[in-house]
Image 1 (cartoon, rainbow, N blue to C red):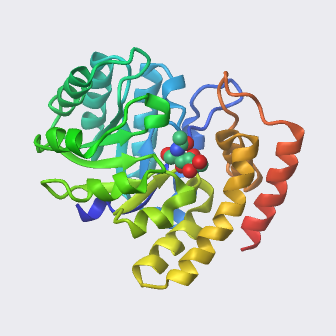
Image 2: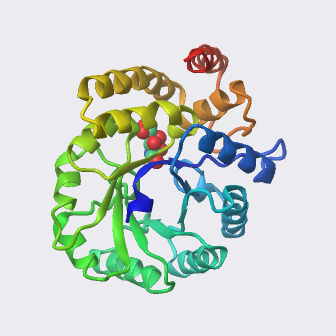
Length: 292
Ligand code: MN9
């Protein structure tokens, strides 16, 4: 379990000028993250625009990311899809490529009943030898994982953790009291410190792509008991996160990395391109981060 703890980047997916997945960009971004102290990568999730890629592109991305990582850090492949069969196909690919774990958001759009969602998770988890991390993202998937449902799912030993992308810190704490001990990741970066305070083992998030150093410091400060310092770090990070939420999170993150010398391109439609005011704001923020 130790190798899964820490700060993991929800890896952005770099696109070239042709809007295709850019292998060289992936390598540059992975190296940049590792240089900033990141402990691992969550590939092809919400941040990685995984649901805007074809299934073949998702598998290509898994390959580029694990090659770029070259055995250095923990690798989790997000294989979630509306279709169980598609998710299993991607899970098998992740296993062949040597990923450490798979993860999946609940199947969405059709408002599937609970039994169907549990079937989806068990079918995917049982399709490979890899451990499974449930991606709990109620606001986007429409499905809220509860302690009772989690206890049922976690009776299958394949399940090892939950990525909790929710502001519900009570739920996060309750996941740490299941019948079996599991890993819980905080999912909203702007609340990382509260997640840690409620028992999270680590965090997976998008802003770690460009603020890895800062969040690693907050994590270390928290673990060393330097709470005031950790609060100060979170406050500084949140000034930046509030700005990027205003203009569009992923577009801003890509623009920021561009300003910082890591070329990751833009976001795929229907995400809107970043406007001039957003671009100007990101220029300022990038200068501030680089000066730190
Ligand atoms: O992976 C990310 N979740 C989403 C986690 O983007 C839905 C977060 O890192 C957020 O982007 C971030 C800003 O709200 O906390």
